[in-house]
Length: 332
Image 1 (spheres, rainbow, N blue to C red):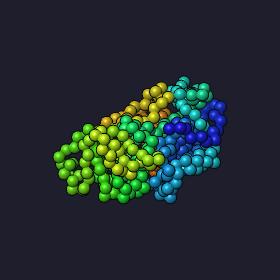
Image 2: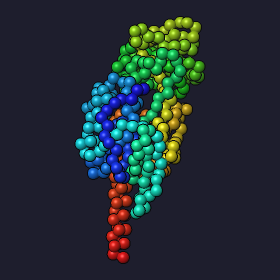
Image 3: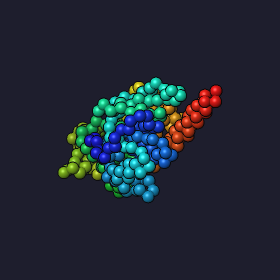
Image 4: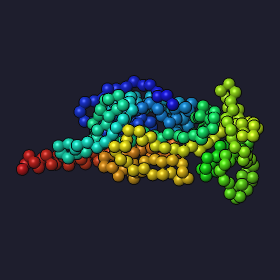
């Protein structure tokens, strides 16, 4: 996926209150909450959002149907209106640094181009990477005719001949949801197992099953037309649904030593977090798809808002502790 370009602010000198790593809905909303609380905040954005291939974002009231790039541009503009900075770059390293004179936390962040930043707190909102099955021709249609979420893209492929390319147990659940959208649904098992009860349920819903492996996805002039099976047979389809493996983007973050968790049914890995996105690492929060792979845009933004408000509250406590210690030292 090629990086999207946008106006980049300069990195500030000195220490900022919060560094937000990731400029998607979660990161930008967290930054907005912090900036509105008069916190100095820098968003480091690599410009490669998960939903970049999609023509529009769906399922978020008021913004339904808006291109993802437009949503991000609006978000950047709003963060800047409150004094936040949006910096284009990739994080090469992030790790705890020596604490301040008053004992407050510090984090050192280095960008791939050599620039550096010091922050009191960190919000990780890097999103995730979808790993598609290695079927020739599949990836080129990702986000358009090849989809994973019926709530994000289902309406756009309604009433079309749809195929489910099975990758594991999650694909069975996918079949029930996409059957709601079309009467013409085929489940390509691709070597995965189906229980007799599941086969009976598929039959009851008129979901056809094809056991022959899928050799390739076929297109005509850039338009998906179907799949070619291993035996040479062609099966016409206008859309394919795939349950991807989802991996949180961790590049450059090893130094933070954030705990990870495995997703059910071998669907991938994400960051582990507690309430409001707090992690086991003091001073570091996570939000959005990096911690909740199933979150749509609205849920990711809400998680960012909650994390941002929690970070601000913890900083307020730290500020008060420092002020009290300074006052007592003066009196003493």
